[in-house]
Length: 136
Image 1 (cartoon, rainbow, N blue to C red):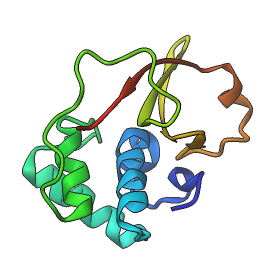
Image 2 (tube, one colour; image 1 turned 120 degrees about the vertical axis):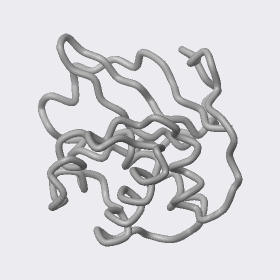
Image 3 (cartoon, rainbow, N blue to C red; image 1 turned 60 degrees about the vertical axis):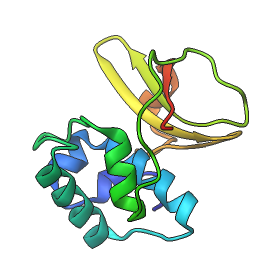
Image 4 (spheres, rainbow, N blue to C red; image 1 turned 90 degrees about the vertical axis):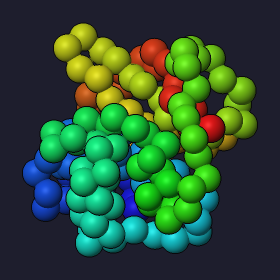
């Protein structure tokens, strides 16, 4: 998936609220060396809704289950808690970003950041990383 894919998707729920979900799918892409198309994304979304890993508004409830569904293997078992506010540079983690009245998620893979929204958008500059989601 390319950065900015979220704005191009036909599913309005994922398009409007799917940044965390899409970050988990990008994580799975990097790990499996596969690329998901829109049909794959929708299938994973619908399967995860049936399994209770995500709700109908795209709120991630069980992130490791979404990652396992995307990978099609039972590799991950939990999320690190409490959410760390600092991680090592070489850590793969999902960044939780905040600015007044808004939150967003991006995937950090070592020193490379992947944004499900267009990283060049004007509103991207004012976010601050508040914590990280590390799936174990």
